[in-house]
Image (cartoon, rainbow, N blue to C red):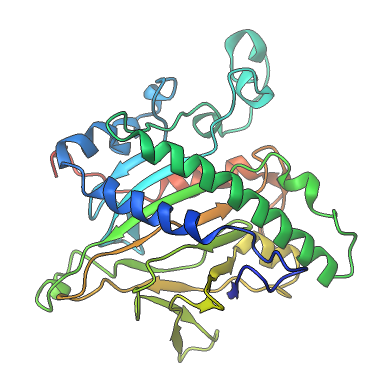
Length: 322
């Protein structure tokens, strides 16, 4: 895990994402979670947990709103709300068309249909959210491309060595709010941290977080049995907001751990602190890229790897007003 400011990588552009856009993205994320619960639950991802809903025009597996506790890490409910957005493939995209009946007769298709055919349930009551997140996506894709090229150069590889693996990136955005809790609430056995300890599983993660977010994101600094952690607080360099950049498991594997995937967790802010918002952007490979995940598994499509991860991320409540 490392930090990227606007002027510290490759050339004077650095990550290249304007401060104003980073701040506006956090602002609309706060506003999203401030919506009435009845509105948020209209866009709940639990409605699409059943694969029979995969062709719905405004949803798909893992996409949309999750209430506090519906995300699960290490068998414990996480103390956060989420709103997940995935790359939407155009109607005529080859990977969407391959799952159309007239294109897939007698074909053995890879197991990632729910990813390829889903749509994001953008809240119609809050059009500024889609407008801002679309702008954010464009800027973050450019940042991801810059970092992947820098990584290639650092490995003595051609500048565009990885480009064919991400030129149709199946990106993910997680809008997250960690509600502030009391000391007594921290003791509830059903819940773990704001988000339990884990490593990210793809290419790169860029964390954009509230600038007053301190002692929340904790990063493991070693792999020994006696783990130690540091707090990855926001950094501003020469009035430029730095992005926290984390390496995913796949990138660690294919670089022989020259770039290491770092385990981390998030602690909920404690009252009277305000709730914490972050909007991590996951810069990922193309759905149809074939790769190996680790030493023990055969080559597979990235989409197959991704969907198996997504299917295990949630434990939805039956009460939709939760």
